[in-house]
Image 1 (tube, rainbow, N blue to C red):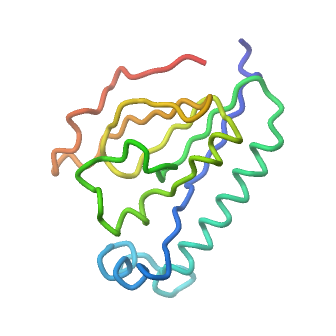
Image 2: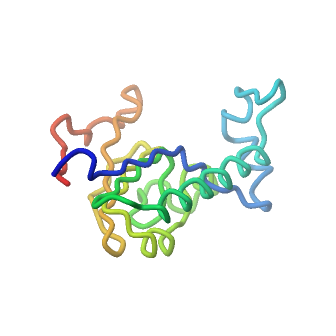
Image 3: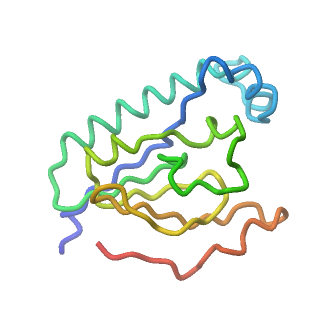
Length: 155
């Protein structure tokens, strides 16, 4: 297969923070205390605006698919399917992942590589899309034990 037959789509894929969790997430997550956006404190409004922009970009790119193979690469996790057990039930999850099961199934990229929750879960599929991750995480928090320097996949 020639390299021109593969379309790589890269996006941060900001997740989406619900109005009912905004206040708690902004107080518990360091990003909202450390990051400045246009000279002001970063807020869930900007976070959600970035989510909307990310989704518009992904939809546009996946609809205009012109190659044999498509690989989406995002920082935020695109589903809570196989989400790490240690985070189950934490409202901060909204700042790390977004449930896009239906979108992934209908748009059907071949692979979706993701990260952000610092845990390595087994590869799995949604429709014809294979979801893979290989996250190093914070070494000082011992999140690196399942990281593999030899993990690869073939298109």
